Amino acid sequence: MNETYYAMHQEILALLHDLVFGGYGLMGDAQD
Image 1 (cartoon, rainbow, N blue to C red):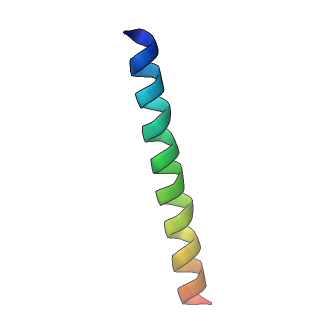
Image 2 (image 1 turned 90 degrees about the vertical axis):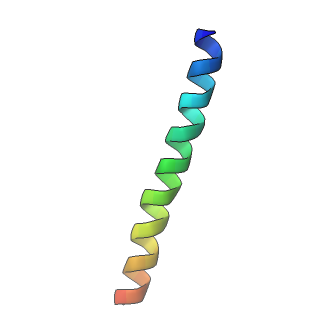
C-alpha cells in the first residue's frame, strides 16, 4: 500500500515538475 502511494506520489511530482519547468520555458520563449 505504501509502495503504491509512493509510486503515485512520484508520478504526480514528475507531472508537476514538467508543468512548472515547461510552463516557465514557454513563458520565457514568449517573452523572448
